[in-house]
Image (cartoon, rainbow, N blue to C red):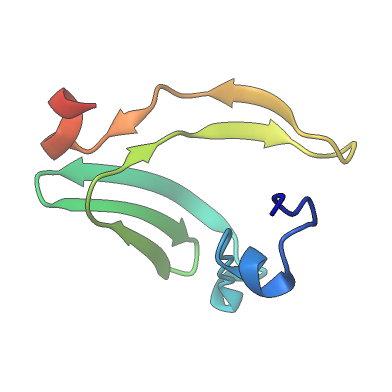
Length: 94
């Protein structure tokens, strides 16, 4: 039987990408964004001017690739890219 060339169903596509929204951050002014990594703890913190913070703790093996881009035209135009950051526990294995 030949392989199907149809698009994945909506149910199948749900597993390809997961989007989480954080409504508590909507409309807040960002004071700073920090990425910290040390043995056993990795975190991205979005600090707001009202002294609240949205933290993203990252576990396991990871590679963080960061870019800053402009979407004003509807198309992404990358303004700056940073060097990738690898989990310190797995740097020698990647």
